[in-house]
Amino acid sequence: MKYKVLYRKYRPDDFENIVGQDYIIKTLKNSIINNNISHAYLFSGPRGTGKTSTAKVFAKAINCANPENGSPCGKCEFCLNFKENPDIIELDAASNNGVDEIREIIENIKITPTNGKYKVYIIDEVHMLTQSAFNALLLTLEEPPAHAVFILATTNVENVPITILSRCQRFDFQKIKPSVIVERTKKICADEGIKIEDAALEEIAYLSEGGMRDALSLLDQLSKNKDLITLDLVESQFKTVSKKNIEDLINYVEKNDVNSCLDLINEFKNKAVDYKNLVKKIVDVASVRAKNIVVSNKIERLSISDYKKLILNLIDSLNKINVNVDSYTILEMILLEFFNSPSISRSIPADEAKIEPPKEPEEIQVVEEKNQATIKENAKATGTTEVTETLVNLRINNCFAKAQKNYLEQAKKEMEEVEMNVNIPGKIKSILLDSDVVTASPNNLIFKTNDDHTAPLANQMLKEIEQFLQEILNKNYKIIFLTSERWDKEKAEYIKNLKNKKAYEYIEEKEETVDKEEMVSDVFDLSKVEIV
Image (cartoon, one colour):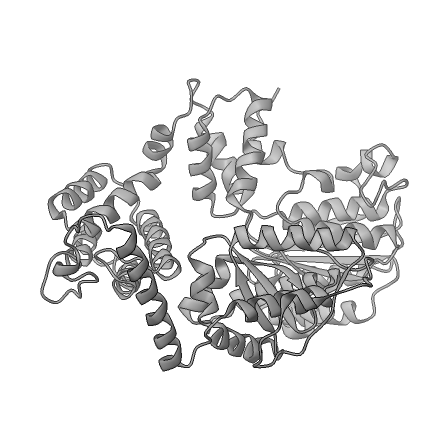
């Protein structure tokens, strides 16, 4: 039997096998179930994320004689003969981008389907069409026959005219998460009898950059090896390095160990590691280190400004690798700037780095009181909120009082929009990335932080965060951040009140002290509230 490459062999033929695009698949299946089929769709997104596969499955499903929960049955005549069906017309705009090809579609579109209910035109890489071809297609999209459905796919939606976009239902495909790629490729390896380490699968997922097709192509290439596919084999085959190597590199810079750092760079050079991939991994690790500084408020030798400078210099170096200069020399010069030098701002002064003997309990109490006093002074000086227990309890109560499932879903979508905003300050972004909205009402949000250090830091910045959310969302949310432990405690108390039919009564936020025990009344509507 003729060999078939993995990405073709495992191309999805139903919605259940399309991974990483759950929202899109759910929407398309619902449109089929409710018989709400549009005349034109636009699938945009990075390569290998399932655009064309989804288009073909959708074309099969809308013509299926007996669709099952919005998916093609795979048993009817149309499903069995889908690949040879004349009602499914595929056009690659990369090589057929002229007006003549579009005019041919226009001439044939009035002919009714031969077998199914719809004639489906799938135009891949639609952004490659010429302006004349787009103009011709526009006329057809405006008033197509009832039996015609267009599915346009593109990796570069910016080059598609707005007049075309406005006539299509647009679905933006996202890069597939590495964990999803690992899960899918692991299953394929089991089916194909391919022996591979989990670490190797994780590296393949990283190299694929969110594209399932790329991941399967890499796996296909490695599968020619009959022995166990190891992480070392992946690194050797594709000239990459492990995350541990990158962590070691950054640690050498942190510890001011210049010799070990240069030795490791020389090792990368001797292995002919791909420079672009190396820089990408260093940037990923460095950005995580920078976020940890903000979240944990713990700084080692390098400050957040040092990491920012390092990342920007590395990205800038990618523009210089085409110059006739050894790219690893550029990397060495960038990193050497961050070793012991008078020009480098030290995050921890030498006298503070001295090891002190353990403090006695009485000393610890005094230090803690001083720290609390310092926090209050800083809050007063900077205008940030001094978060009292009363304020925390008040905002928890008010959020619980009017919490509903639809508010929570809306808030989660809003936070995704906020986190993607290019103007979000670094410190606020780090806090929000480390936090999840767990309860929402029209005016209040409760965030649970993944790191216990984030909550107190975030609560000292409430006014700043609320002002930023107001600018982006045009909503005046009152927010509060809770540690995981505190949230679990409040959630348990809330559930207990539910069982006892007790309600949380909304209380206007004022300066005076509010006793939390007065917040519970006797009546509670159980129907619409959802707690994560």
